[in-house]
Image 1 (cartoon, rainbow, N blue to C red):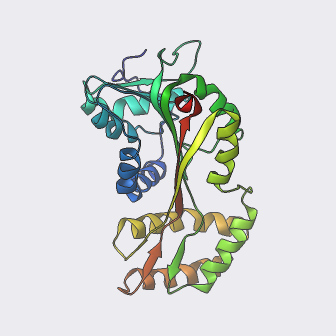
Image 2: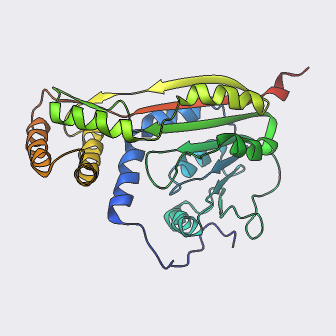
Image 3: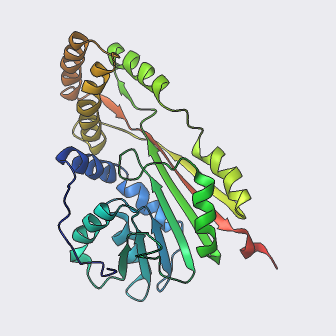
Length: 279
């Protein structure tokens, strides 16, 4: 069960849209995530726990940092997605990566302390933000070593915009965001939650970038609009005629070299175990 490369074909599968969404989002923040992982000061031989690891794209990045003597444990609570992760990581055999389903009764997290615990909350169905972050942190805190760091990465569909702007798009996005469940900034939320769990908030780095047509930001936003546009029509945020007009105007921006795509906002938050500061 704990063989990270065993794979049993599940009864269901991800849709091509879900796979593409996860792939583009991973590519969008690839270099920023590499820099974020560098700041965790991982050393060869360290143990890393990645909770709710999505499709496993972060596991090889962390495994490179801890080397073959270290261990990277990816926890995927969904059994179906755990099989997907194991299939995706077959080429990384022998790199100290282990995937568990996260059911304590059948596939428990390997015992011992971890120098880094990493959690990613992404703008997709695979790694959603938990409804009660404190409960999750309380479960993970006992697994953190006295010198360890807990790192959280979140990206979300806010802050995106196009320049020159499209008024139809701006209005639809404002209506859409008003309908989203309210979520306070991650740094503000985790500052209190970390303190409650005896973790010191060490750093919080907000991120956003602007890129031209043909860039990964442009590709991600093209896919994002094609996915949410029909949802907006169904939710009466756009009429069918407005959606057609928006598509035409969007296409014009895609081929205009003066266009800038402003990515969604992301933030990387790092906390350090308070016990490491006790003399």
